[in-house]
Image (cartoon, rainbow, N blue to C red; front, side):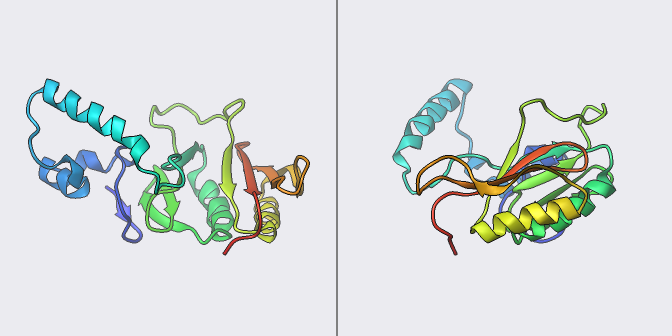
Length: 191
């Protein structure tokens, strides 16, 4: 059972909610899937055309990520940490799957913390890191301070990384379970 905290723009297969939907309900969530496009060969032609059209859509400023997730072995403890940290960015819970996962965002899924789908213990990825873009250097500093106050550990104090006037301003930390995060601001402070 999925519990929506507020309306959001799409549902993801990763949320597990679509398994509870009928085909008609799925089409309502994903309107681009409406209609019958025929045989697998015709569907492949449509996919190839769509893939070729991707480069013709310059209005998108960023193609990835859709949303990121980290695993946890303590969902209650993790959500207490992320409720505080993500509030710095104005993000709140948008989808809660009790005992399973909590997703955060503005109007859509942007970040989630979840128990691994395979039932095995969550562990930290070696070389994995999630990056959050801040609106200002002050927000980088605030996010780092909130993360440490909420039980995270320091992996790099806020400061400029690199040389030149356009060098990013960054801070690194780990959540209480060891997942690594970067909060950064590249360029002048934004709105």
